Length: 327
Image (cartoon, rainbow, N blue to C red; front, side, top):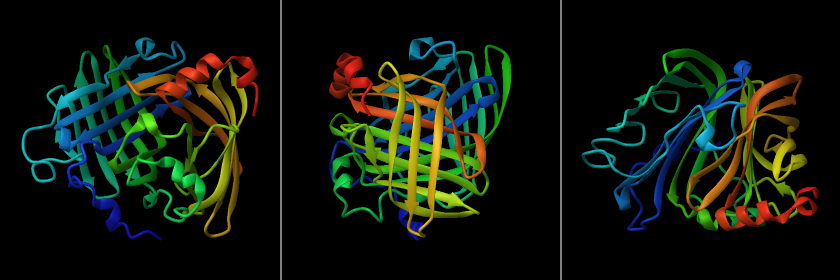
């Protein structure tokens, strides 16, 4: 198992690379009300800039201008002080109302936000150790496609609870979840298109996959994990297969995984709350709340994301049904 101390080493920029990124993401949802949400942040210490924020969407609209709420800030200055000394990505507050605090390393994080009629107070509690991406697959060809996407990246299953409030209406949040974090040089325009999916069914069961290379529409896994019987282990092989699309958007997906303990898992997912994002000018993706069936669970919470550099995203949109209908 990966030494967890390597996951903690993500506060000091490496050299002078201007694209060095410190990222963090927390997923949340209210599945029974068809509501999905996230808090995603990216620090670029060598550029003295920050981007990120919260989003909340439902079935009323798939584009960010139709979301119930969206506040993804770009090119904001860093908080005052010294990076890694006075603040870091798990201990800061922005002038526009976002506050993130680590309450217990690798286990408990509190996220708060208050701006423009939207308030949020959520606590993420891990249910298993983080899984560092791709440590067992570095010598496999698909891993090379990640290029400059990250130096170190991890996912961690958990539960997230608290509340969100929009225009005076407060909604309780209490669901299984996932978070991620990473650091390293990151140029997303050059990152290979691919798929990213996960599900956390209960406090002992879940999975995650990263599968770049959408050329064949059956993308091989380059990272991920299986959590079964409370034991998390890294994925060493598998795939993400798109079974059905609505136009270019994936609506049904199959995931098959094998981990380094020899365990196998097959999950079938269907979209619940789709969204089309352009969180960055050089990247587009579908980010969809999914319902997953696997290991005896039905309708387990999770997501499917399909992402592209912006030029590939434009080409895919313009490709038409003859391309979209292929596996």
